[in-house]
Length: 142
Image 1: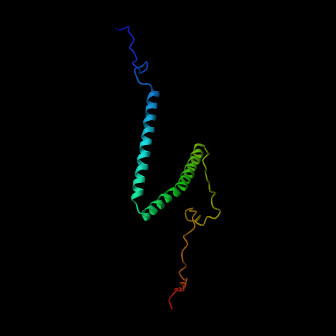
Image 2 (image 1 turned 60 degrees about the horizontal axis):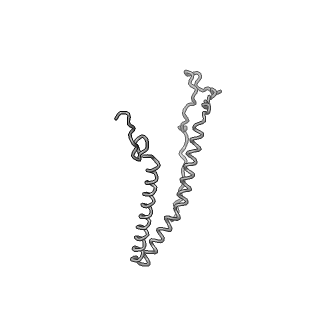
Image 3 (image 1 turned 45 degrees about the vertical axis):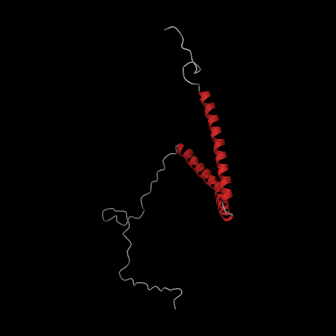
């Protein structure tokens, strides 16, 4: 028995099903399922359409037209946003040299005599400044 070859029994040489057979069966099953789903949906639409009033049909038609009208702008928005992401992705792949900003020292150093700080003193309101009187006009009031 050791030297005898094992018959494939229709499963190919390795004993497994070939991939082509499964693809054909899946395509046929998907096609049949699509036909049954379409037939069910059409039958349901006809039955519901016969029982609805004219006003309800108008509302339903408006809703369907509104959804149909919103599909192209939605697809356009998706297309534009994906295009921007792809553009950013291609730019991110490029390597740019790092940007280094060096500020020169200030020419005026007001605190040079008191420890060498190079910051200006905080700006405050002078003590002798009189407050400014502001006038407001309320619209609609006499």
